[in-house]
Length: 234
Image (cartoon, rainbow, N blue to C red; front, side, top):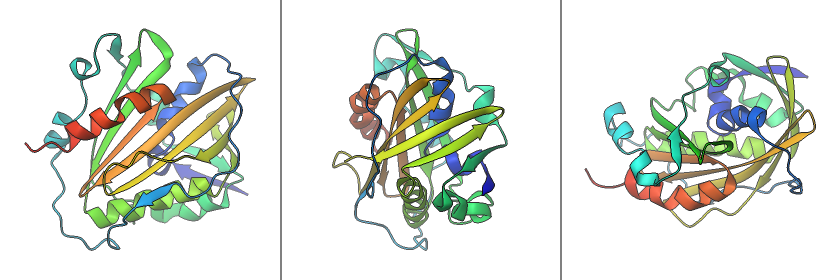
């Protein structure tokens, strides 16, 4: 069954990765196997929490900068491919079940978002992207869990982006013990005989959701730093 899902739903877990595959070189890394649940920590309530979301300006100020990351990093402009209205997901009923509710302001309604992306040492295959979302803690908790759980339920599926077919394999991995809730996974994107492995880790602390994605080594290197800055009192 072919179901169209807008990039809003996929963006929390895969939009950055979809932009990486075209510039990647081949890899001999083994493909991940079927995942288990990616979620750890203490879930928030069912979406009725009244904590006040941060403003867009406040979110932007909490993103990592070139100065924070150190030498060798260059900002990466958002590509046209990441702004597509939709993609097509094949072979993942769990993602299909998110359907319209996920993309029309239902339980995944994260009203405020800031994003920064960087390329390391001039290599387009060594990238790291940080996204900050703010909303009530309950909605962040429930919405993020729904997406990560849906992808964890699909060890293999396919995404059609424009005319390109991308095979996706997911593997849940253990996230560092940071924040109140955390999710982490590896995604292997395969197209045209080229594999790209992307790591995606999400940390929720109160009304703030941090997602760091990109090259696994860079995600591991900067996750703690990103959370420290994102949650600093200002």
